[in-house]
Image (tube, rainbow, N blue to C red; front, side):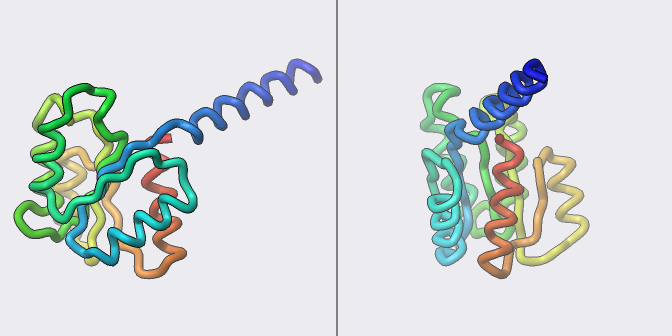
Length: 151
């Protein structure tokens, strides 16, 4: 019995440490309202230490080019698919083709569900391809999914 409790205690500790791990996230979305909702939900509900927001994929790439050490890289990049200058698929392709960034988890989300776009993103290495949430409850559930891949 004591051995089971000890094992259970260790598992809980591991789970606790995973949940408390520092999460560094980059978010790119050209919709200011969507960026604000993500920031609010992440700040209220999750242990996100750093959240950088951008309006398009070009800004994400430019920012990452300034990162000097692997420790400064994000754990997760969340990309809206439909953005000006460089959309989510183009950004994903650039990230996954660069050895410095290829291991970063990338999530693509979009207001529409296009099977060809989803398939292309998966082939390029997206960790998830999801439909953009339409309610606060859906935003919270979607963010839980995003963060589940970096836990």
